[in-house]
Length: 413
Image (cartoon, helix red, strand yellow):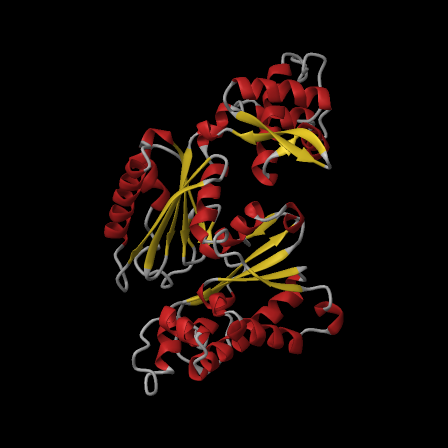
């Protein structure tokens, strides 16, 4: 009978390389001492594996100062390839391209018509990606993964939209299959708010990454991404965090999901702009509304303030269920600054128990880091089939057999 430990040192070494790769991908550049602390591997093993990965072009090192002392930082090499992140919304198509060190290389946005067709939008997105790659002197051969964010609930396990009507015409479209067939890399899809939360989780400071948080994506409709113990909470069918479909008015308008009086029926671009039709006929978009609010227009500030109160009520209910440490406000409406923030905070404070409210910190997101397409690019990297260059096929079996991917063998150094 084959001993599960026999002949497995090569697999174990590759598993530990994958562990180092995943750790740097999660936390960013680290010293070898920090890598050892975060992985449980010995410093000798880390040193040996880092040297091998640098030689293989997977990692690169650079000098830095940590705690007043010179140190060598280990990063993922930018030669490892690039990833593309899309966000397909109700009215826009957004793209960003990043390298494997999460450096933004390019980004573009295209407007989409109302009720845009899936086939034509996918074709436009593929052309946009090819043109953008050319503009940065890159080729499709350098792609290692693609991530796609959708303004709809996504069943992550099945990789499809889980609720019909919210992004009409997209429910049965094989999105990941479309991109994979053209660019020959793995494509992974998720909800846009989840991807904004993923970007916050991966690109924020190390201290912020430790907190459980709720990311609120407030714009033309409302969504949220929930992070607990460093993981996105998606739920069984991808509906976790879909606060835009919480009922706020039983007799309200019919929502795209088919229910009546959802939060999204009272907080969306068309609804908010319509409230100003009589007095502010020049305001036709949410961007116009926010710009005028930030310029001090009382009517526009009132519309945004009322929307923030509505959103805060739904988020307070969510906080009672999830009990986060931080609420992060992102999306277009958050750009209205105090018009939005103050009313949102007032609503949450009014509805939460003091004991629950006290530990909760409410902050504005950094829009440069938390756009859903940035999270989509991260998802593409984390799901990239090219990472299997580090992770051997036998790793999964090895983990099951030994339960110790971090255990060092006599030949592991």
